[in-house]
Image (tube, rainbow, N blue to C red):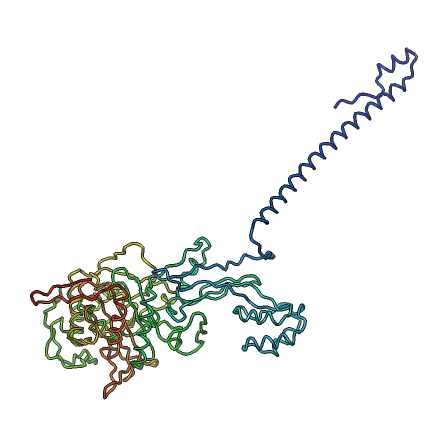
Length: 593
């Protein structure tokens, strides 16, 4: 804005010539200038008031909108924001293949104390000790009367306990919301589920984390907020799992065994429908791990996955399969079984005298150590290693359990010819029952490699070819003969055409050598034999069958009857109807389910 001079020279000179007072011009110009300044300030003030009015109007509008939202929403307890990272407590459910709940979350509360707010610490301490017998009243009194301002009392309490604490009436006893992991089936599938516990904790929430089993192995997936309400669906069948565990527990008691394991697997895609290890535990009240001694003595030890054992004669079928696959023998080739077989200072014996020779088929049926060792000598150590490696017997299984990577098979430091001979009949090499089930599935399902899994497979899975279909079929026929006329006759379940192999291995001593009266007894097989759908492995630790005049420990008397009962109970649950065995008699046909 251009400002007018107070005493413009031209007007001053004109006023003097006209005899006027020049000061009047200055006063008039000064008054005009003041008037213009006042107008400008008034306009500026009016603009500011307008802006301020608009701001207040927007603020009132936003407050009104917020009040409307709060009025329309459900009431909730306000919570202070923590400075640290947010604790996410939500965790996805775990279900079986049919959607039945195996693990879920339950809303509960924690209990803590703020001593400065307590009215009668001593009375409250004794009342709490009466509600929770594991608490010491004197220790609580010391804590409540000390200098601490916050004390955890219980990180998880039941609704009944919460009400009892509430009835104490002390304002310094407070509750924090919690979500706990609940396993509604108790001991069922305990080693598979593992368990969960609290990670990071706050007063108002706690993080749920997996501590073992599939809860730990799939922790990231189960804790993913992006999953929403989508549960983790396992391959287990809860009904079959319950039947297997019940039969295994009864068989373990009947055979006086100290431990037992069983695996029921889909022979085509490796899905595990049931896996049991005894003794077990309740994941709702998971016991503490052993800090010293043998881990296998703990109920937390998963014998089906973590236990690596010499599995005895169940390995003999691998030697026969490789020899037939590589055209070294045929099923009718005669093998020298005269004993003992001497190699250096080592002598290999058979449990019974099988005569001077057996066919390859009868070496398996009669379970001849000598015959199997001679087949292994034809194969040689290097080719044997390659074949067993292709069956997955040299590396940990890939099953979705946190314990699986640590269960690596125990192999000899040097794989000499004598090692090849003893390993051919299951001595000198240790593997887990899950390794054995996987190898049997790959060998007997038509020769396609399978990988064990606890997750449901949405699409068909077909692995690489490890043996030909012809070799696989012959091995099924061999193992069917083992059940019909060999060492596993007690495994016969009418209508289900069971095929399998027994294995009895002396149990090694911790300090070296073997016990004379302790064994690991195993049965591994498939059913139905002509169209294998399922693989079953049952292992008993130190079984003794005492119904006869002398104790019997071999798998044919211990593991086999238990396996037969598992099949008898589980097969109908799996939808397998009994069928009629193929027969040479005219007029009799094969009826398949």
